[in-house]
Amino acid sequence: MSFYSKALRSVAAAAVLALSFGVADAKEFKIAVGDGAGGTQEALGLAFVKALEAKTGGAHSAKLFLNGQLGDEQDTVGAAATGTLDFSILAINNITPFSPSVGTLTLPYVILSLEDAEKITQGEIGQQMVNKTVEDAGVRIIGWAYSGFRVLTNSKHPVSSVADLKDLVVRTPKNEIMIETYKSWGINPTPMAWSETFAALQQQVVDGQDNPYMTVNAMKFYEVQKYATNIRYIFSIEPLIVSEQVFQSLTPEEQQQVLDAGKEATAASGQFLRDQEARIKEELVAKGMEITDPADGEKEFIELATTAVWPKFYDTIGGKDVLNNVLAALGRPAVE
Ligand code: MLT
Image 1 (cartoon, rainbow, N blue to C red):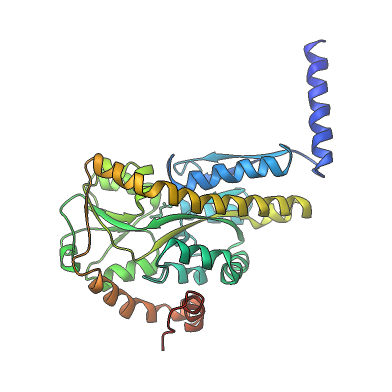
Image 2: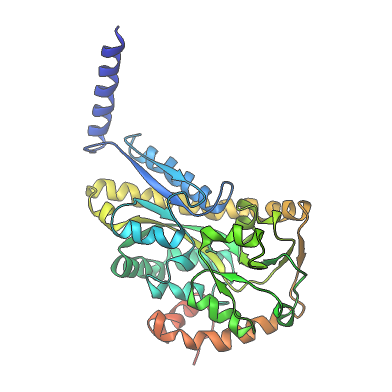
C-alpha cells in the first residue's frame, strides 16, 4: 500500500472515531501552566489531558506549556477571556483580581487543610464560585489543583516570629488580600508577577516569597532560598480554567467531556498532594533548605492577620455572609 493510501486510511479512521464520539473536528487545546515540571499544576494538567483523551476516544487532546511560556498567570486570565487562549492552570490568588468573590479562598487562615479545600471547591460553594468567575472574568473553572500551604521562604535568616520579618523584602502576587496580610504583620511587601519572581529572588531584588513546598520545588527556588517557615495563612488552590468563549463553542457532549475530565483531574490532584508533599519537603531539606516552625504555634501571625484583614475585604468578596457560608460549611463559628 502506498504512503498516500495509508495516510488516507488513517485520516478516514480518525474521522470515523471522531464521528462516533459526536465530534465535528479534532482539537488540540493549549493549556498555559504557570509553574515548572514536577509540581501540582503539571500533575493536574497531565491528569486532565489523559482523561480528556480517554473521554473523547482520542479525538481531542491538549498540550501543556509550562513555566509561564504562554504568559504570566494573571495575563492568561485576560487571554482566556478573549478566547486567544484555551485553558490555563494558575493559583487562585491570580484569579482574585478578576473575580473578587474567589478572594474568600485567599483570606488568611480560612482554608486550614487539604480536606477543607476539597470540601469547599467540590461542593455548592465551589460551584457558586465557578458561576461567578464565568460572569466576572469570562473564564470557567473546571478543575482544582491542591498544592499545600504557602510557606514563607527567604535567603537571609530563619523566621519564627512576626518580628523576624522586619528586615525582609518579601514578594507577593499582585493580590490586595495578600498585600494587606503582610502589612498586618508589619512590613510592606513587593507585589510582583509570578513570571518575574525567580529572577527577582536570584538577583536579590527581593529576599523572600511564599508558596507551597510543591511549588518551591517545581520552580527550583531552593537554589536561591535557604530558609522556610511553616506558616499556613493560605492553602494554595490552583484552578484549571477554560475560556468561556472556547467552552461555549463546544457541543453539549464535548462540554460534558471537558467537565468530566476536569473532575477526574481534580480527584487525582488531591491524591498527588497526599502522595508527594512529605517526600518533596524532605528533598528540599536534603537540598539545603532549613525549615522553621513559627515560635508560638503561629498565634501572633493568625491573630494579626484575621483581625486586620478579614473585615477589610467583606465588601470585596460580596459581603460578610460569603465568608460565614464558607466557615459554616467547614463547621467553624461565624464572624460577628
Ligand atoms: C504566585 O505566587 O503568583 C502563584 O501562587 C504561583 C503559582 O501559581 O504557583
